[in-house]
Length: 498
Image (tube, rainbow, N blue to C red; front, side):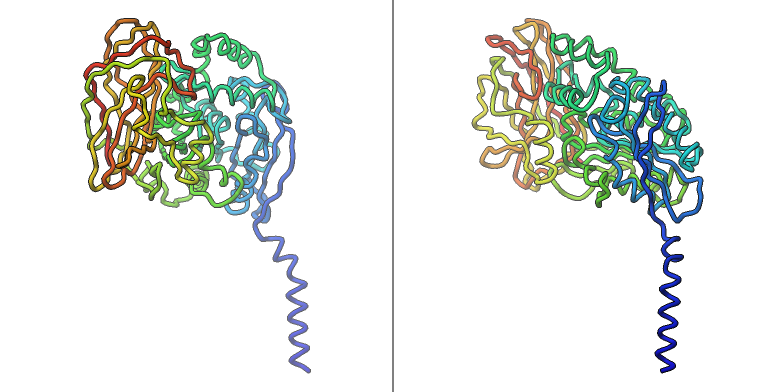
């Protein structure tokens, strides 16, 4: 009887004490708030604050939304960051989209200035610590974060995922319009937002075939042109993109990374635009977002977690395999293949192409299904085809393949498309990387130095590489003319290996 009474008393004591114990368990709360941006424009935000972790002030992370995506985008990741690490996170809809006011200015001064306005508001209204600030985002939000880091010294660290660093180089590589990317961005902007004058004028120029007139807006909206300010601020920058990003290809990211002088980290992995980090934004397990959290813990909170002692360049092979880690961008041994001369007809497509943006890269990233080709079916009358070395024991390609291409077009303007494939014994190929090349000057022989997009790719035992160059690709706006020709002189292809 006495023992039963003791057990009852212990149980009651436990139950009565439970609310107090629960109250101090770390958690988070979410509120929907209106934040005044530049010029008083209202930005709609989901503010995620830690609970059960004291009264603050708390380190702050600001996350502008992606193009055409509302503020709910980062709430899953924000909840984990608030609960587990004690951050205040402001996930807000970018100016001109969905529930926020204003017009889309394509990461112009007002949109970038909004990041600083959100920081001001969070310090005044959300118990945020103005000395511990980070900025992060995916795609449009990533570009804003980098640009804001150049302007606002309070931003100690930035994490930019699926970002651009050079807008012209992304959408107009080698003076060739990435038609599919431009169409997707324009359509999404119209459906979910309110295009401002800059975007309206850019579309008019694109529709009229005057895309070169859009290029001058790029510098102001590209972090590559503000690298000196970012370096001077000492901002710790983490970059995470996908090898097959159909909107913001990885070459510009690798070059931007190389120009940074402060703490930096680069992660490139299989996938297409925003696919590699997609589930992490929702709060699900994700390698990229795990690194984002550790990056901010180190460079915003000041926690000694060892991330600064790790190899900063982390590259996952595009066709599967473990992360390969480097101290700097890989630039090791290379195979150089001499390419003999030949002549092709221009303006007609082949079975070789770069695939469809968002779809092809996602298939590569999630299912390891590459953009393929059957090399025997590539019409040699309208495409140049060259075989590379065979690798009896396989090889890992790592870095930026380079072409030194001697070419003579018969038309004033011709667009070339270079594709590098891994090819098996039956002639079936998997696209490793590619690049468009615009050539001008009818009858003029010229030698072009062309960098294909960088890659890390595991070539299978006994397979070889092959180069295909043709003059039409559905992803891009081609300027090749039917009836014209292209003559290739002695050229070379250099492919780096790990």
